[in-house]
Every structure is written in C-alpha cells, then in structure tokens.
Image 1 (spheres, rainbow, N blue to C red):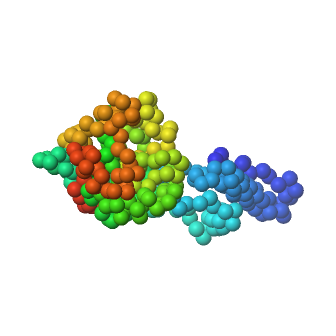
Image 2 (cartoon, rainbow, N blue to C red):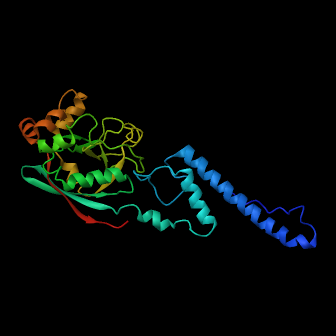
Image 3 (cartoon, rainbow, N blue to C red):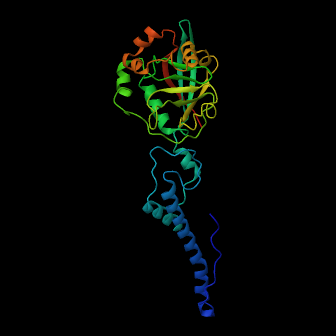
Length: 297
C-alpha cells in the first residue's frame, strides 16, 4: 500500500491562537484517512478473493478450515492495531500454525524374495487436509498389505486399496463421495518423487495415492492443471524400491491403452487381497506402514 497522504494544512487554522489545532489536524486527519483506506482495502479484498489471504504472508497455503474474515473481524482487528491494543501478528506465528512435517516408513515386498524400505516425508504446509488424511490412514493400518496395483513406467506408482475388505467398506465402498476430501490449493509441482492423492474428479480424494515417477506437472500428463496436489515426497528408496516395483501389469496397461492389464478397483476393494492375489499374484505390496518421526522445517 502507498504511504499515507502528505498532511494538508488546515486553511482555517492560520492565526496564532489556533496553531495547536492546526498541528493536531495536520497529523490526525491523514492518519485517520490512512486507517480508513486500509480498512476499506481489507474489506474489498476479503470480498473479492475469499478465502485467499489479502496480503502476502509467510504461509504458502491456505488452511483447510480457514474462512474469509467478516467485516466485523476486520474492523475489530484494525481498530485494535490503530489504538495500540493489538499489534499485527509476527511472521513466526503464521509459520507455527502449520503442523510439523512427519515421515512414514513403508516396508515393501518387491517380490517373494526381496523387501525394501521406502520413506516418505509428509509436508502439511503443502496440503494440510491431505497430510491429515494420510496420517489417519497410516495409523489405522489401512495401507498394511496394500498392493501397488498400478505401476505405469515413467508415470506413476499407485497404491491405496486396503487388503482388508472391512476397511475398504468403511473408507471406499460407503456411498458416493463418502469420506472424500475437498480440493485444496496446489503449492508444489507434480515432479518426480512427489506423492499425491489420486482422484476421480472434483472433491474426490479418498485413500489412493501415487508416487510420481517422472515430472508430470506439465506436458504430456499435465497433472498440475488437473488439480492433483502433492503432499509428500520420497526421501529414501526412490530408485532401489520404487524403481523395482513389479510393473509387468502396468506395462500391459500402457501398451494396450488401458484395454488390458488394468486392475478392477471395485472388485479389489470389495474382495481385498484375495482377489488381487488370485488374479495378480506378482504385485509388489506394502507389508507395513508406520509413522517414524517428526522432522523440523
């Protein structure tokens, strides 16, 4: 915002006995005009850009539970600031509002004879709702036994259908749109090694996630423009675990343009591991998924 307007001399206060009044007006009126202009800009910005913040802050995301400030909130805040009752919050306060990153360790059965460790660092600042959902599912044991049911070379490695049909009925087969997350702003690109929730459309994220095997944000896949929001990144095992996941079914899907090799995800959710073990026995899978630590920003 531009500096406060230059003080104008009160044309009435020209005699010596009104000198004090002239000084008062020359200082107070511009200051009052400044705060009024600031207040009006906040209100206009809140109406036009809700729920995005009106002024830049250190935060790179909008909290999922944030709402546009009301006129009363704005008036109260700036009145308090103007009178010295409340100072604007420091940048550290905004940064502290975002939960700390955490890591998830996946023990992966690559084939009957080989296991590997895959670690992901979840970044709530990138996508807070996705980070909370992923933590909940890990803590519930949802991903234990989950197959990497869609590994398309150079594109994505996808998992997130539970081996337990009971958990799938709770989280996936519970009705149209059940337990689906609302979309949230994307703050990171879908580049190689990042992790995003899969989605069938608007506000459609539930349990399935994928690791980007290439830089998919731009052409030819354009995942950024399609609204896929990274919430984590692989920090260990990208080459020696993700790079060695069984991909033979995914190759068939890629070559056939989806006409063959694709897993029937509805049946996989309904019957769980029995269906996948019978028809797709070579799929790599997650033996266990555990939260192992909280990292610092």
